[in-house]
Length: 104
Length: 413
Image 1 (tube, each protein chain N blue to C red):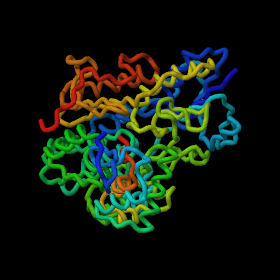
Image 2 (image 1 turned 135 degrees about the vertical axis):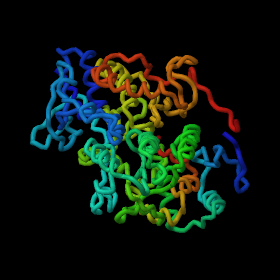
Image 3 (image 1 turned 90 degrees about the vertical axis):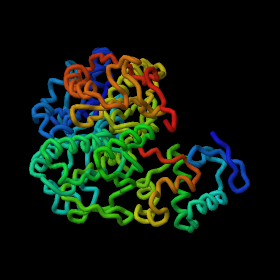
Image 4 (image 1 turned 30 degrees about the vertical axis):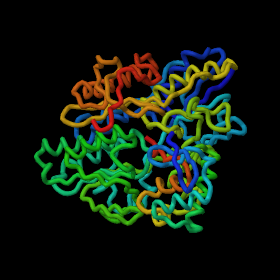
C-alpha cells in the first residue's frame, strides 16, 4: 500500500487515495480530505460520516447509500445534495474507509 | 432423529438437499424443504425469452421430480423463523422444529419499491422487466411491436441477480434490432447506478467498449428516485425519457427474513462469507442469493458455495469444526449477440481476467473474449442445469477459482 503525506501526516492509501488503515483517520483529516474534493463539512455531512465510521467498525463493510439512508437516517436525496454526483464514493473517501465495492 | 430444514427449493435449495441427502444417514437425519411453488424455473433462460429464442416450456418444469428421494417437501409459505426456539412458523399455522436451518429463499424483483414503476400506469405497457417468467414473456410481445424510439435498459440498484444479464440483454437487443432492420430507428441507452458497465475494472473496460462499438449510450452513476410516466428521474434530478423501458427492479430477499429479524436493509441475511453461517447463530446458514456475501448473485456462485457448505455441514453434524472456506467463486457466460458469448471467472479477491477456461491454454472457453464456443457453452448449460446441477451430480469444475490459464493485462497495452 502506498504511503502518502496528508496534512503533514504519513497516511496509508490505495491507488485512488482511499485510506486503508481505519485508525489513521480523525476529524481533522476528514475536513482536509473533504476540502480536497470541494466539500465544506457541515453537521449534516457529519451525521452521514459518523454513521459510516460506526457502521464500518461494527460490520467491516462500507455502508451503501441505501444503508446510510435506512439505518443512518440521512435520506438518499440529501446525500446527493451533500456529496454531489458520487455520494457513496465521496462519503467513503472523507470517512477514511474503503471504496464501497458496489457488489459485483 | 435430527432435522435439517431448508427454506426455498430454487437453485441453491434444490442442490443442497439433493447433495446432503446422499451424505447424511437416513437413520440420523430427516431433511425437509419448504417452498410455495410446484414449478421450478430455469432463470438463466429468461434472458432469451424476449427474443423468442426459447419457448416457455424450455424454462419451466414441475418441481417435485427435481427433489431426490428421502427428502420431505412441504408446499407452504413461511411466516417467520423463531430462531430462539429453533422453529419455523408457516402462514397456515403449522410450526416446523429444526436442529439446523438453511435459508435459500433468494431475492425477488420488487417494482413496488420505486415510486411510479408499478403504480405509474405504465407497468407492462412501456415498462417491463425480464427477471420474472411473466415479465420476460410480456416483453417478448412488446419487443415484437417496438419499431422505433428510445429503448432504455436500466438497473435500479445493486446488488442484483446475475449482474451481467442487463448487459447481455442490451447486446442481444442490439443484435435483434439489427436483424429486423430497425436498429437505425432505435436509440439504445444503458442506465446504471455503477460508474461504468461493470464493477470490476478490467471487465468493465472490455464490456464498456463493447457497448461503445454497438452505439449504446451509457448513463453511469444514475440512481433512480422515481418514474414519472415515461421518464426515469434520478436522485440528482437527471431525467431519461423512454419509449420502452426494460428495468431491473430493486432486488430484495424474502419478507419473512425481515419479519424474523434476520435481514439487513434489503432482507439479505448477513453471513460469514467463508462458511455462509448466519452472523450470531451456529445452526442457521443462508445460501445462494439470500445471503449478503460480496460476490455475484448467480447460480454458479450457489453451486460452488453448495460444494463447500455440504462438506462443512457433514463435519458440523459430526461435531467437528468446519474447515472449508468459500472463496466467492463465480463464473458466468455473457451473451454478446450474433451467436457469440464471453466467459468470466472470478472470486472475492480476483477480478475477471482474460485467458482460457477450464484448461489453461486449451480452453475450450475463452475468458473475457467473444467466441462462438462460449455461446454454445451457455446453451449447453441448460441441459447441465436440469440433469447434473439440480440433482447434485458431479460437474467437473472445481469449487475454488484457479489462476491457471488467466493473465493480467499490462496497463497501457
